[in-house]
Image 1 (cartoon, rainbow, N blue to C red):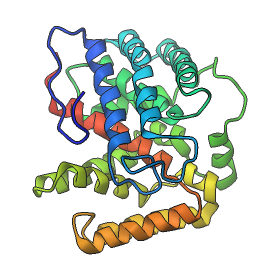
Image 2 (image 1 turned 180 degrees about the vertical axis):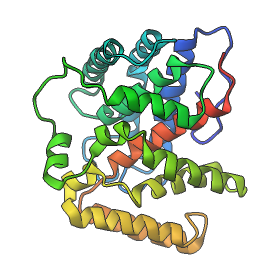
Image 3 (image 1 turned 135 degrees about the vertical axis):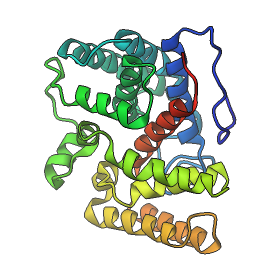
Image 4 (image 1 turned 60 degrees about the vertical axis):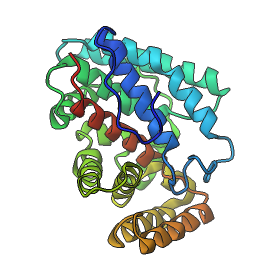
Length: 289
């Protein structure tokens, strides 16, 4: 795989299309995990607000999801939006969760990412020559808005948080065509990249842009509204200071991380959307035939 912050290399033309898409999805998850510094999250410095995670575990989990992403791309290849496709993807997603849990010995490393990345992989495969991000998220959103009749009915922690705080969560984000990725993450990434900034800096600033507006259920679950307010205001303060490429921005980032750790809060929802953003950016840049 590439170094953590290098732009993605073109994949071999001879590799089957579903495998190439899966490789890009895994690489996006790896790049998200390795990106440093990320406030409150696992990165190259340590475990952030987590006591059961590590960078090595996140990487093993990402690799374990590759077969599921291949299967999702294969079943969605050149297919229209349909109930049958949505339910196929749901079944593969549940198998992916099982593979993740077996790899991590029961630790939830990527459940939210399986949902978001799985939809985007499938949506890309549905029309492989139309990889413009707005088109991909529109197809992903159309899939997400279809009910999976076979989805287990037990309530998840994320759904409980959504109900308690009245926020859309990961499901609502996908059903709305990933607005925090399209409207905040990608524009911020490309703005800082086009200004000549370091790729790592552009990616962290994109994460902060997502954090500044996202009602992150991971933050709410761990620290409630006070933690979410600290996360959003702190991320905005870093950007207002010019991002992490400035001295004042780095000071604001340290303050943000201090507040998140005090609340034992980790912006895991924003991290999942960062990985989704990196995937969309990669497929938009590359020639995948």
